[in-house]
Length: 546
Image (cartoon, rainbow, N blue to C red; front, top):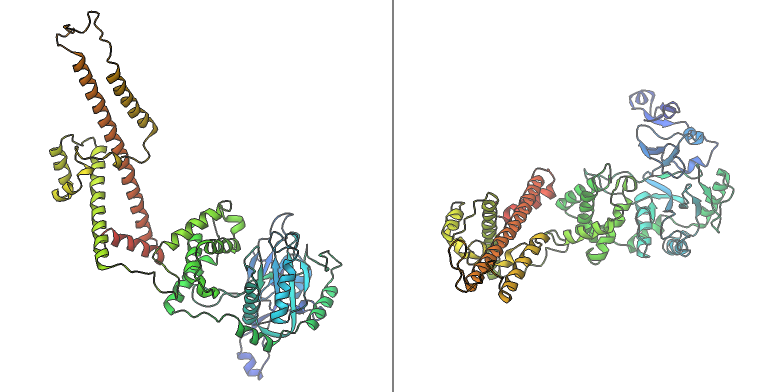
């Protein structure tokens, strides 16, 4: 909810140009009351789509919101009831670097990082002086680089970002951010707003000296340092244009690729807006980095392997809502690694590099097709066997099994080509569960031990009269050889029963996995997402449904 004071301190004023009649016909524009006696506020001329947040409790982060209905008034900033931040317009007279307190480039972790950062900007862009500010109570740093001549904001963003990246620095949220930023695309293909930054010298913000110590921080002191830096910095339009020519050229992509990129950006740039979104966002981030990373970043090679994983992690951490809504911060690296492998093994490929190499011969294609057909047939046989086992209608005899499976729509030729899946004389133990139940394994080992022990030591007959020429209580004659044979047959029958149970267990697992994957593909088809739909359609064609 926007505070009432925001509305009270703003006013409607006409754009006074032209004749009286023309002025009446011109639409009014929304402006604000300027405090001309406060030159500090004049350093931030772009006040539209500004940021505001209530002062947070100690140790918590502000909950920033954007107000786009009217510009930010000078009096609101002076009043200080809320925290405020500003964005950039078409031109800017400064650039700013944001280094979080937890960043690897913070002086507490790397005392030489800032000298290297500023050295690169001095060498390439003639930015030799800056104003250092502690941004908030968290201890992050804002380094302001002002210059005399207002320059195109996008050119400044491109130049500063490219210079730092070529110097080996990673630009990412929580690590190092550049203001103004290179604006991403919105879902409609247009450029989105520049990122906003909090204004200096608000609650918790102080000027720092060369030793990184807080000093007296008034607006006049800030202005003095700002003007001193302007006098030292020589960045102008000619220097900027010359520098941009030496940097990587802007990327060009086709209209179809731009639509794909815009769809990815539309999902990614909003970040986390609720729980349960991590997997989907990481998938989109991974796909954008793999497909467009080389083009967008001007790299010599596509993003793969470790570089792709690091890009996924850095991008995720920089998105809105990561700190508060991402429930997988502890295992982010593992999930990024899994998504990197997934997208690298998919049918997608880096834009501009051509399709993945396909040197498959016609003979290999036929072999691959035959292999897929055979695997599909084996899947149908396994599923039918599992269904019959689950319904306790799996016959023991060959002919009965054959009739039962042909009744499921499987041809006799197919069955005899895959006897190892159903024929009692050909069922292979290796088709059993790869992870059998521990209790079943112990049972099988027990039967085996019993058979081996019986062959070594025949059991003592229960009759006190001995075994030679004796009759049993039911009148049937049983010799030691007969007893051994009966026991061996019992062991063999027990093993066969165990084998069938293990095989049924494997078939049930395989069927469950197939059904689960099939349901996932159906969900993809109904999701409305073009990428997921494409994955589902490819699966349908592979399974012979297309």
